[in-house]
Length: 239
Image (cartoon, rainbow, N blue to C red; front, top):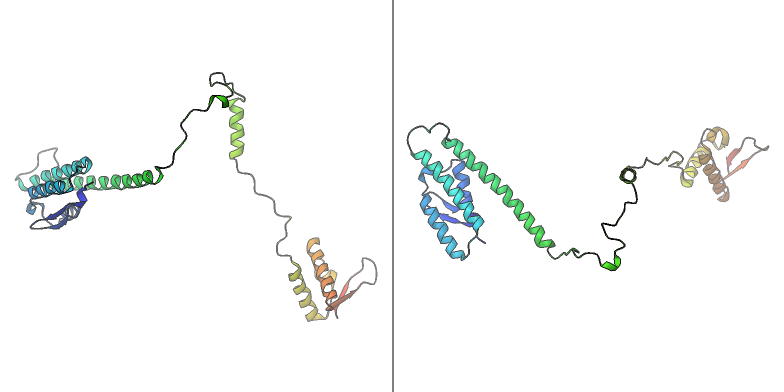
């Protein structure tokens, strides 16, 4: 498939692809009056003959651009002010630029859609009707099971996000290893600690883990404790 952007030109004032020529013309780096548009048309005809096939979309694009360039060049060459209601040279150039940008946008979009189609063309979807033995009832004989309002309410409840779970009962950061470190540090600084004074203000879960830490220290021979009466104060000492 041939494309206008693939057309290479060799003119007196320019050499390169056709789309680059349009860009430098609109930026006024080359005067349109110095460009022979007839040579561009002949070069494009030769380009089509070399390709051996005709892309109607590309040819249409070329004809529109050449027609716009011819109109713009005629406004530059002909003397006198433009008639009322007609575009001046600068306005015509702006309109041509807008057409080029719009074409480029749709051209790039078509390439993306073409690539998606080629990538997924092998995927087939079932289009055959449901076999008769699997049909429980004809569509005309089918009856609604639920009222539309009830069905809509059920679907709405499914789409509603549930409330965030309450995690206030989960106590993060309480571990046996951490409580072992805290008890060891208190014993290292004072030699002995009063359990109620040191841990009485903490919650029951933290106190329970601390008791397990004391049992572990006692098992390792690092600490011991005394309690003179039931439910009395617990004094923990280093072994």
